[in-house]
View 1 (cartoon, rainbow, N blue to C red):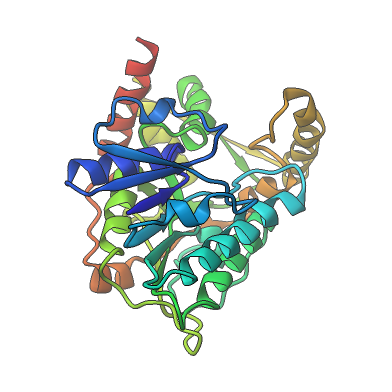
View 2 (view 1 turned 30 degrees about the horizontal axis):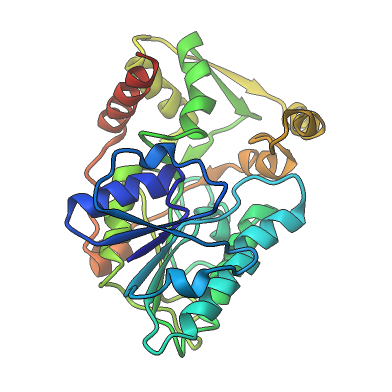
Length: 331
């Protein structure tokens, strides 16, 4: 099977997950990819190809029966970068897959952001109307729609995870760790903020399950073929900070609400500063728009029933395991 985005956080964990289970895996990477996260994995093949240009895609698909599509753009300076990296790239991949005499099955890792936020106390399920609020979310939904457009030629399943954390995470843990170590929890505005979350190992298990299980996308059923996956719980932001604080040895956490106008101003400032750093900031107006929502939660009933997905990691165990990895990196 072929894994796009194999050198990233989720991709490198998935590749290890698959290889340990005896699968023949080809990691699709770019010529400029940093392969440090894939070091030491035996029996792993590499295919150098470019989803943005289409170069070498056909060769990368030779002998492949399943494609797990993880590559994408989570942070960007400009809206066009989201669309090029998430939508146009997915279209090129689908074109290349559909051109095969026997088209491989594709599992697309999308995002809860593609469906949009939920309401406090009312986690999303797959029957709810989608309403993404960010350019990132809109681009991920558009990528899903691209794949759905090939439903007559390609079998495809979509997973929509919420926040993902675990070994190799460079976004969620670095965002919350400084607060946890200081015993504070900063949130946007007053009122409760609710989140679903999933450990990367559980997401890998769900992606593996979707290889040969689940209803595939259909042009006739616009809500079928997509699955929310999480650890099955709903957490207030204070719960996340408190659990991480315990993982770093602190017992008390103080919540500090920050007016949304201040949060939005911070996002604009970070966007202005980002060009000097040479890479897009994980704090920008698009991400702030997501951060200011009251709830990002989802139900996993359909994934449980149709993918036989059962999460193994609760928040306490998952954070303890992730912290072990972080400490090892600093050792």
